[in-house]
Length: 516
Image (tube, rainbow, N blue to C red; front, side):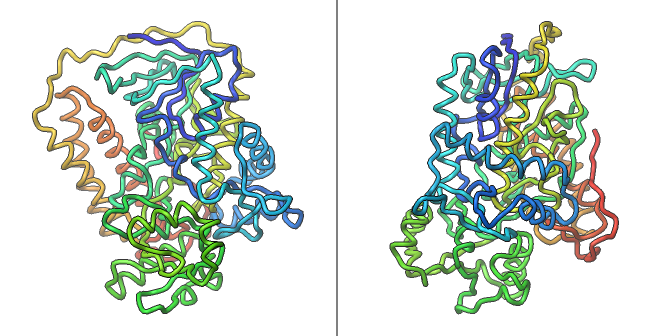
């Protein structure tokens, strides 16, 4: 089956939905969701959107903070573009119905690690949910946009260094369909599901990054995976994040005996950047043999806690934890992919007609470490820039013809256990060998085994009918390979990449670029 559109958007997070909304109504748009329409990292984002909204703050400070947190690798031009467009991004969100938390007659702005001012606008502790639901409601009102739920992209359709859509698996019919498009936008999110423990939902398997790599796009700085310092530690609390905003509002990190420890690692204490806090927690857990540490905000008034953190309070209560009286058990988990598909200021990749936005893209705004609440901001700002650039282009009238998907030479697998086993093995290798603290020995051991798994996955892919799990496995092994290559290439410690064999930060500042 061939579906023809002017624009194909793969991904329905904040970036994908905002780009669809900003595209001209004269363009036919296909919007692809690999799961339910609202399932993805954007929906679960608790924190907020950073923007200069306070009279005591300014663009220069926001830019400076972002550059410093990025350990010298941030692209100042891209950061300046993002920061200067942040107030307009807030306004765009308000225009579609997002109501940011107010304090008297102005925004209630909070702070998070790395920010020198209060500049995080939020909707209590469920900002992502509010943004997503309002964006989706607005998108559904546009007649030129067609939504496809439970469809997962397999590979991009390319000829002569130009992209013209993608092969996409209809998960309901289990048939691969040809989606032909003049312009294609990758908005598939990050790749933190490549790690065993992650704050991300199951959709974060790096699909867009892997697909772009296979067709020749440069993939940049994949060694920089941000580990969020505080995920809820409980056997039934799958992937539940404890927002950094708690620390911004005075929560303290403590050990089981009540002792604070952040003073041993950084003068900024709990408000140190995420890479510093995550390594501090990891160090305390390993040194003392602890399964977790604790985050305590019980010194605050109970009514204040419930008003500011209703989602976190309710979730913890489900597991018998009253955060107004007890500290929260927390551990670090893979959270955000700072690297991705290289793009310019308009979100265009180095392949014709192909764009990337959101966590799948490397815009250069995060450098070696993302500053908190710059991610939703990046999604909105660059989604708008991407749409505006496409709107200004001449519509692609003629699409090359691609063959329909041919499954005549493959059979249905009776060995699905192999997919499950390899999926689990990849994620354990990534967690144990490419985690918060790395070493050359672990990196090279991981590279050898991942190379072997790559061959096993390739062979399996050639023999059997594809499925959603197999597509994601193929993408995960690609992500693992690229991440390990990137980590080995960086012979220093910088930001989120810490190698015990190269503990110093080099005076030479350069990106890691992985080519096909």
